Length: 350
Image 1 (cartoon, one colour):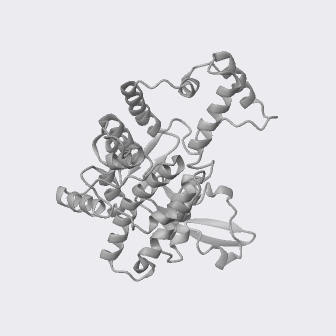
Image 2 (tube, helix red, strand yellow; image 1 turned 135 degrees about the horizontal axis):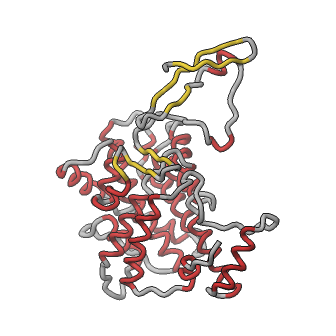
Image 3 (cartoon, helix red, strand yellow; image 1 turned 60 degrees about the vertical axis):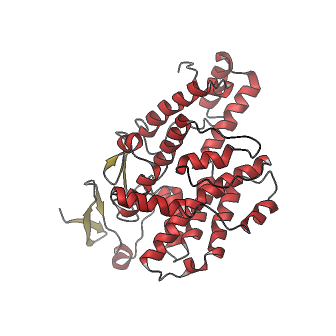
């Protein structure tokens, strides 16, 4: 089937049928308005594909997630974040030489301009780290004005990509340091990407910092699992801003802003705040949790159960299975006891 027929009144038009990389079918309606004067309405873009892409495939009904054809379970188990980043950007897993060059490129760009420290000093301690991260990411375009040239050569674009991946970790860590009032820690090029991020986040100049390999492994998996997820809110935002030929830094900054919202990446924060509210109301007892579950089920209240269920994954989220094991390993190794985790993990029945 190469076309499908659409009838509007007594008029009939042919809509081309497109087959995606995973054999998904789509009707191309790009000429609909020109030929009929009609447009389509699709709230939330639930039924609308905005581009053809071979990057990510997910099947929410069957709990499938693949990057460039590779199952997410395989990548999380065997790959590093930078390998997966290379795969997503360039379409194939790197050879060892390609990975060495890519890793070296990222490592050599981890420092941010020293003048940017003045920006951090200007933010109040209570500034939200996501706001700081977005602002500082956009500010990178001021330090690399060549990125504003929409006609850059491929090697210049590659350099901007390396800078963005490298400096995002530094900016994120320094944003956290600003929020807790600690001095920033400069990146250590002897460490891999995940270990370096942890070092910059949690090391202190007053004492040595010991790298915990289980925590590094868990973070590496988290970065892989969150590297891409089809045309979600933040990815779509980056595409829209980038379509104007704005710099990569500006597009990424806009994506961070979109990710900030509690109905997207900010749901992580919303979950912690919800768990804290439950605990403050009556502790981690089963009785208190049952009471709150009843509230969540009551449609006459405004109480929302955050972090349970997914708009796309109707069966199960394959990422959750992977990260649960990693989280269990970390919590056991660190001997963490937290009542909020008890609330999140207690079974109280339906």
